[in-house]
Image 1 (cartoon, one colour):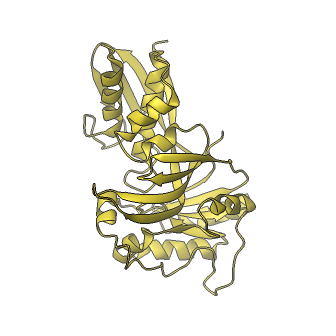
Image 2: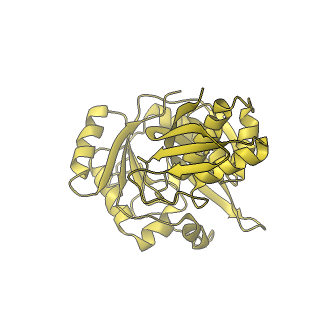
Length: 295
């Protein structure tokens, strides 16, 4: 085998609780994470002792400043292999959007190289390598689609998979720095968002799909929530505008994913999700309807 094609799925955070700042400057979190059937496509091809990365149709860096490139460096350093690889990365997931696109790319490169070069490293080894690249990377090396992440996000407990749930993703067209959001988060002063997910504007409770409710129980909550949302929404009010539009379009809940700015709505009915996604395209530059990552 001289080449291999791999997929890198997006993720959303169905819950994200920030538990406190650590002595090393990072934060401890507790988060229910879910992979989605929205993917970047990556082609890995054997080459001669050099790493080359191309990102057609994208303005992403094609050197050590790209986490996919860093993943290849990490793999070859660990393996000791004196060989190279050509990486062709086709992006579908927005960057710096709260969807884990870069972390997923890195994980896909690690897993793909493991297969391409028959190194047979265990998932545990690959997750350890991934943790050197970013806190979200190990999640994408889990076999399932759902997991509870604790610690800095690298301690993972796989959760039962879900099905028959659809998500409408809306990105307002700009990126947000994860570091900026965490730097501006205050554990004692974080406020709840103006629009509570799980509720309509009138305050009437909306029932979540049963699959989602079961996942929520692992995070000791009834509803999706994101402690970081108040930080991002305070500087970008469009976050709450998107949430309101999703809730008014029959989403059972609406929430910002990760550090944002992407917002997602949860639907138990595919037809209603389609109607919502079509309506949102008239107002926002990037809208996707997707289901969960197949496992």
